[in-house]
Image (cartoon, rainbow, N blue to C red):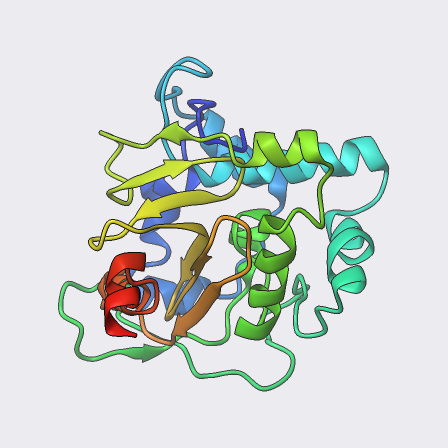
Length: 255
């Protein structure tokens, strides 16, 4: 599940589910509450894309099921496990799994097109119930906390060596209509930039917010950034990463 080769249908692509987040429908359904079980029900109502292990196909359903397994094995909630294992040990004071539509603390306004093909006008999409994303992207955080988290994860400070090797073992994403130039590990991916440099990390998006946290494979050099709009795609992130992570020979020549 974590390397996105389970073949499970992505519940977010269910036509009825997706339609509730488009245009005026979003305002009607912005406070809808979903349980993980309901999200899985939506997914398994569709046939799988492929047999398990056969090919990469990104699906939020994988992360929902992974967190449900965590709860089953530990007897604790996903939120409790996040706090005990990650946010508290790393001091991620700006990171939380919301239990409602609000965002605690200072935060930008999120501007969204609500999937309109025309980016004007945009709408304030800051307040919504993120239970539709849960373990697949429902956490709120800060760029500083994300920077610290990926530094610890990629730097091997969260997992023992054997699990770290599994984390960084990737599968190709070619032909899946996903991000070009990438390979997917266990919840992280590598991406080859136009400059030829490869960076590691992860990214995510919700209505009016795109975030990218990428950098060196060992976590020593990272760049975490966020845009509070959802109409520009990944282009600006790639430009910034390309400028920050210049090829070694270019850096040497410049100095």
